[in-house]
Length: 217
Image 1: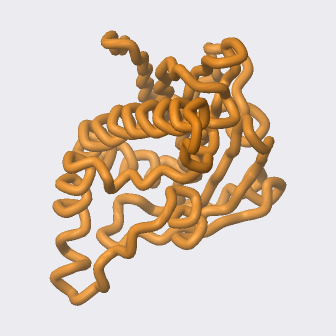
Image 2 (image 1 turned 180 degrees about the horizontal axis):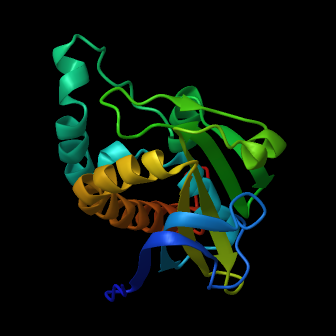
């Protein structure tokens, strides 16, 4: 699926398949997958500033995202789960159990986890890069995603995020597809919101850096 308005996105779902889009930071960890999404947007800021904005992003700044998560987390909140404390994206991700699989400072990061997203209370289990690749215990989904800032010039870049999912057996594949049919529209909206947040924050930081007395990056 193509998305105009200055940003592009692709979504694929179906049988496990190899990557058709050329090299990706996810290839060493998940060369085949059940589902993949890639979204990107041009940013008027250098790649290292764009990457810093992506790492620091608070996705819950978006009213749309807050509404989606309010619905998604309603069962847990009704059981008395504590409210979310705002935190940068990567800080919150790692606190939930995800683990860094690859990291190129100022350029890209890959995180992954083993999980069962079809459960009401989702937990994430991080693995070392080698253990993540080798994991094949039935009944699970492996998820890996990226944050990338691709240099386009001295003062421009492209922000990209890609997510891949592969399941470990036929039943988990069926459970994941049922989950995906319900939640993928909200996930797509969250991805689009993240593009806008990163773009606006990176461009704000770059503009401030060019002004006398501008704020810190």
